[in-house]
Length: 67
Image (tube, rainbow, N blue to C red; front, top):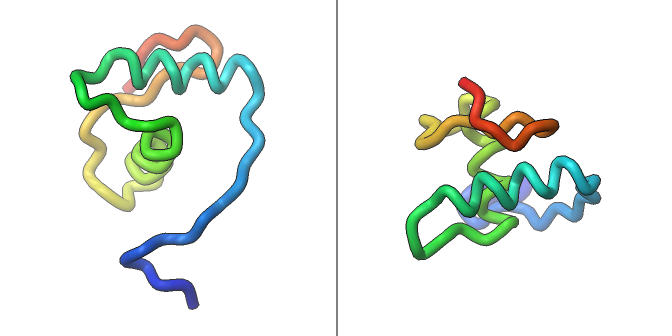
């Protein structure tokens, strides 16, 4: 099993509308803004309940926040 502390490098392809929603989510954060990789990791962790979500998730179609 991979080391949970360091994580696993995971390569994913994200389509344009989803990537725009991730970028919109990043833009709403104060500096220093999270990288795309960090943003995706936070969004996934929050949605799965692996960590307490610190923010709401963006709607992948509109880019607006959803609960």
